[in-house]
Image (cartoon, rainbow, N blue to C red; front, side, top):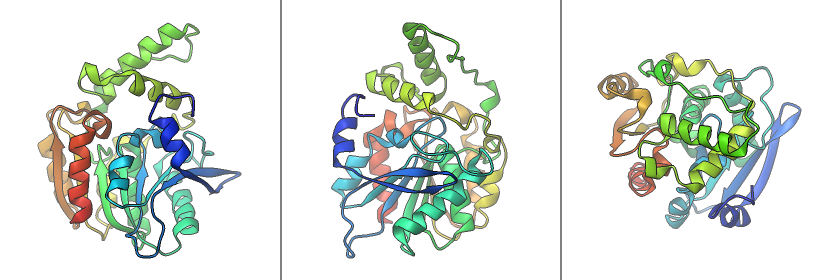
Length: 283
């Protein structure tokens, strides 16, 4: 990953890398910030599908500036982490992730922030292990029973040998699904996306189009917030229904919509997202 553009090399150099068991392999974690006993519990960031820890590249500095320890895995089956034992979806990822958190944190609670597939994973984890999360923040998370993913058509790229042709497809897919404004598809976004999709070994995910997260939130006992891009194509014309679905959860505190941002809201409008997340983490 060090061949990627700044700030990836800087963040990698500053991170402590850790490994926890995952089936026959391991989960790779990056950790930044204070680990002293007087500090608040860590913020654990879970990336989206076809991603890695780099989905959070524009948000780590703000959390560190606020004095937080930040812990970010490559989720099982993505990035540099092994596939989870037993299957290939969020319900297979969550147990391996909790095993890793128990090894790294013991009984310490964390603020759990999950983006997209990572939001679904975070919700399942918080429901199954209520002692783990002090707060749960869901960012562009699926499986609330209201998304419109079926109308989004992504182009295939693995059959293409020409680098320029592959780049054109990646740029198209970023614009169709991830980012609302064309100017947000910059060199960094393109480089991260290209590197991440190459290492996605979880390509038959099924739960995103169900109500698995909505159902899990009935069992979550910590406070829950949601932050979405107002222009997220997965919820176009459905934000009211999304808010209603969240409101059925007993711990739900509120939904923040970030203007001029699509699905990858924490990248596209990092400044606004970071401010919204800071308010939640201080609540």
